[in-house]
Length: 275
Image 1 (spheres, rainbow, N blue to C red):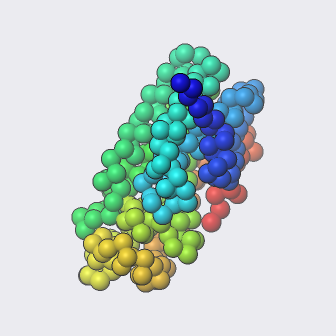
Image 2 (image 1 turned 135 degrees about the horizontal axis):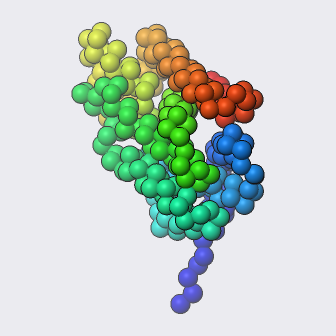
């Protein structure tokens, strides 16, 4: 019996997440440059595809994301794509580097595996954000191990701050949508966690109900109310400033490793992540 072979590149093309692919490529290329490594075009292709495929796994949590039902119906194919790309990366790097890369990837996947930790509840707090952000932190740190099996703690910490900045900016981008999927799915992003805290402090039971206990249909009908609350409460501004503070922390740590400000600015990708 002939088994159909699934091509990761075709799978991604079908899903059309070109912009995210480009960001993973820019991030990895900037890491190569920062660490003084020679560009490896083949490895870059597989790294950027792997980053995108992990984004698709993350999208399985959000049924309002474009292509959700396609992903649900093709989870086997998605798994095949992930393993195929990992095999390609394994060929391109040393055994030591690959082992540490996959160890870090495992931590990233573990962080996103417990969906309950991502959902807003009446007891949610901003401390719960660690569940969401660790997926991004470990994923971005994992790419370091492809290039350096023994990275410095300062570099890992700098990339952690950078990943937190990226995740907050990604959270904010969701509210640019007419119907933010994070609201519909009660996802514990920083803006929504912060807004829930605000609702508790203001004893705004109606807003708290909409965020944590309402039905899917009620949340969809209340998008305008929630967006207005995000603006009037100052939550969006708070998140923008916090993201900037993490970007600045990352910059200071990276400057302690290298004096090349141009390379650091490229790695921070501020133009791409600008709100």
